[in-house]
Length: 201
Image 1 (tube, rainbow, N blue to C red):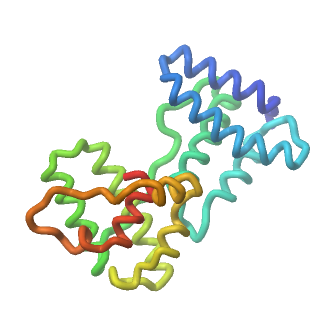
Image 2: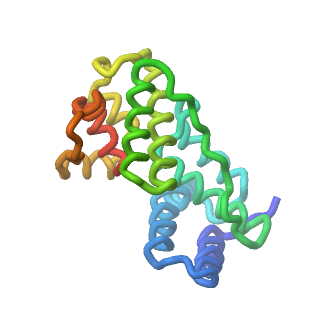
């Protein structure tokens, strides 16, 4: 199995990004997640050389009950980038396929109404796709927690699915107020709206 010093591998990825016109902001996000993720783990374990097995073990720590949060998904994406560079010598555009869950049941129907609302507001397909993914993951989490109605959603469910940065920002920012003459149930539900804010949506 091929092994490379993790810092050298990261530098190779950054060079690839720069050659392919990635923005400085996007590169910075990669560097931050590597520093606080795989690099921190390897330093704790006194490891210098990276291989795909180490990356796989780290990626497994980002998953809980077959669900992956937004921050965890980004961390896994960064591992896939390292694996691409070490095995292929370049980085593929897309390294994994998001897993969508059907928006079924009482809560799922309200989530579907939100998606329709966003479509009527002419939000971009990327934005709607992101909403659909995060909502489906949250619904899957709620199903596993045996929560099937909006009234059963508690703040603890929201915080369990939000990373620390999102939790802090959710507390610092006010709720988004959408202009609508007829509010859906999800608009009146502060807990569900807080979850959306916690995921920076």
